[in-house]
Length: 78
Image 1 (cartoon, rainbow, N blue to C red):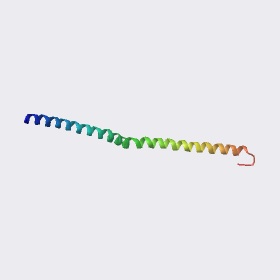
Image 2 (image 1 turned 90 degrees about the horizontal axis):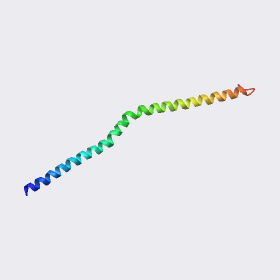
Image 3 (image 1 turned 30 degrees about the vertical axis):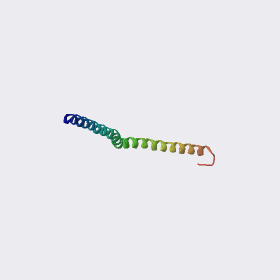
Image 4 (image 1 turned 180 degrees about the vertical axis):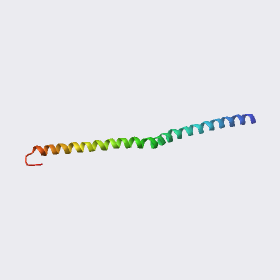
């Protein structure tokens, strides 16, 4: 009887070990990408926002040049 109890306890211990490993892996699968995103995403996004703002400024300059060119073509305006 003691041997049977020992075998069952051994199986339960083995099962609990793998449950802990699985739980830790599950947490790591969730936490590691979040940490990596916090570290690497801001520099990437700042580059994207910089390019976007340069693009918007460039369009504003082009539009202003077009308006100035159009005004130059109209007599009596400068």
